[in-house]
Length: 430
Image (cartoon, rainbow, N blue to C red):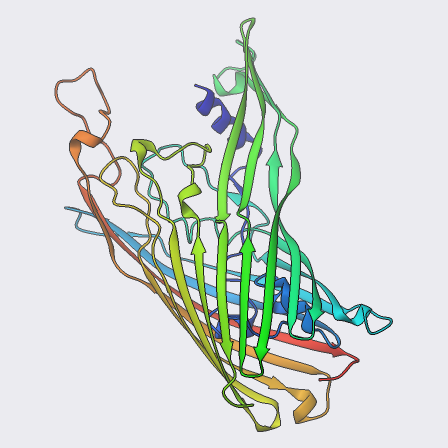
């Protein structure tokens, strides 16, 4: 009953019956083209969210802005159904970032500071809380790309070849104290008798992160990064009153955008024009909860995963750079024989990009980077076990199963993205 009333409160707060947030796939073009394998590379405003230590490399103030457009082709088909469900959609976003060394004496210029902001094109906050535990959900694509996200960080060159960094990322959360009152006879229909009062605020959820970058040799750099989980909540105290009877209780909706992450990275510089990088990231998906901040039904649990990302960059004459990236991301979703129907398989990402530095081309203080990215998931399948599913109507003989994934299902997704980033350099040197 408490869950039902909480859903009612969110329904009246938004005509779409959900709040919202997100900014997945919103990396700058250079980062995306390198497969996100940038934690050990020299930093810039676009990498401060991945490793703040790179800000210690700042030699001049710079400001970047850009955008990306995405289309995900996704389908799900239940066993025995003649047609599949099309869950495809398009989305996009914009971002800006800035970084600068501190002005003043030489010791102050060892410190770089920066901020970044990702803004989705459609929503600022989008929490999708399903009414049914068996509703098909794609954690990667449903709400994750639809949230406002930002970061502030600083990096310090503590030794000539060692940099440390710290920062925090922020995402919005909702606070919604609600009062629901039923006045019998006030209106000719039942819905008209319900009076809802909601006090809504958009709060900031803060997640810290730390980074280390060391380059013991000209040809080798190493990195270590820890990032806390990024989570949004919609919470409050809900009071329901009807016919002189009052019931009160808290509600708490939960959306995990990015799990706690530890990244170990390395970058190789075999020549002045060629660089290679590799990042290995552990992600704590086992902390994933359902939309009501409860463990998943049936005692299933998401798996922690290890993602491997790699990138190559080739600097050509006259400020032209070519880039490529490849990454493998295993799915955290466990075998689903019971009530849940989470969608998402192991994913392989391929990215390509190019950069044009007009300081070298035409002595103008700006650069443009572009990228395309393809993310393909392996087909996912699940076979349900009837004894693991709840009976939809215990009053009838036998098991009445209405699970939305029964007797099994298959699904697959494919993401296509294109993006462009412009960087303006303000003083300093290349």
